[in-house]
Amino acid sequence: MLNVKINEIRLNNITLLKDINFKLENNRIYTIIGPNGSGKSTLINSLTCLLDKRFYSINGKVIFHNKDLLSITYEELLVIRKNFIKYVFQDAINSFDPLKKFEFYFKIFSKNEVDIESLLKFFLLPDKINLSRLFPYEVSGGMAQRIGFVLALLNEPEILILDEPTSGIDSAIANLFLLKIRQFASQKNNIVLLVTHDIKFAQKASHEIAFLANRSISKFTSIDNFSLDQGSEFADFNKIQNELV
Amino acid sequence: MNFLLRLENIGYSAPENSVKNKYRKKTILSQINFELEKGKILGIAGESGSGKTTLAKIIAGIVLPTEGKIFSNFADGWQKLKPYPVQILFQNNGEILNPLRNVEKIIDESLRIRYKNKQIDNEKERIFHLLNIPVSIRNRKGFELSGGEQQRIALARIIASNPELLILDEPFSAQDPISQLNLLKILKQINSEFGITIICIAHNLTILNNLCDDMIILYNGEIVEKDSVNKIFESPGHPYTKFLLKASNYNLSYEEISQEIYLINY
Image (cartoon, rainbow over all chains, first blue to last red; front, side, top):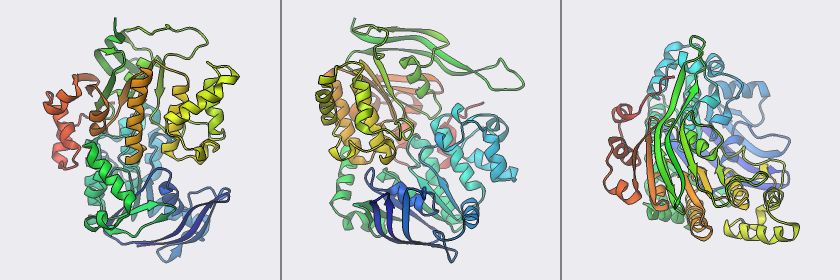
């Protein structure tokens, strides 16, 4: 369970987000949707203190395993980031060091060969030996995204946070992600937090959705009730989605 | 002669990074043939890793093809010290703008190549207006913009250099639905008002359907289908096209996906 109570996130002297209160329960998939620049990435990065403290200041609490992630020591935080809360970032290729081969990442994240191979096979990627000798700029954007996903899953985290998993990949691979997300949440009693623009994907994948706009987040509601409860901005989103079909 | 570009038998293979066999090559594209008409919008869709970005780079002249020829028919040709008439907007947002530079200066720099000081302000205003860039973000710096905003500024910078052909690599992926619709309108406007030919690479087939005149489907480095958008959506010919259309509803099972996706052998 992750309990988030953030009063305010500031960048220099601008308030980016305020009054963010939500609770994530096990065995559920949550989605946050919202317009560009509304602070979705800022919010999820703040959960494990990934924001640069020289520029951002956070006032609040993020309770995980009875610890406040925003006030524990850096060493404790590293353990949490390594073993419990994992991210797949939006910009897949750039989230790898261009001067290190994929071998480097496989070595760090897991010693269990079987795990790696079976995950690579699930995501329809080449096997570990072939992948290890490639540099991040040698693979396509969609492949980098899948490799990022594999690496995030290797340590069997409790919470998986995905920033725009469907951007830059074709719908077949997105479909593959969808299956894996469902499996991850239900089989091991884990939490998934998604951030996306793709409403169709959100509706298929998640149990509960919240809308982030005007610096604050709405309550997480189940998908069926969601479209009715929300304000005009979400209605616009939905209308456009239908208009484009 | 109303074609802008003609690609004949374009192929590309990259040297493989292998210890065992240093001179083995990996084929990324082969036998690409098509003609791009002036003033049209062409969509390119296909599997991830099928060579879409490589094809875009070849057309933009960033990468030289290892086989085949490209014939171009630009209005002014290409002169030294002028911006190249093909401009490309890359997929990776977040690294396309100088994070420490302010938005107005980024656009200024691009305009200064073509205009004198007096004209710059007018032209800048026109571009900001065309791309719906709000006054509030014009004085911000690169790192203060979100992914979608950065992409729009990068597009403004490209329009400022007045290209004849604009290549967009996944322009819609970082945009929310409202911005997607706006960008769609902007692209159509750029196309009709300035007569800029556009090639758009995207995974989102519904958007391509709304935007493009013609479409190319790439699969495993080859063109498997090439037709008008209406025809492809009404009666897809190749099995992979049918699969792509079906996949956009996210209802496939694992077996269906794994049968269709080509596993790249590195």
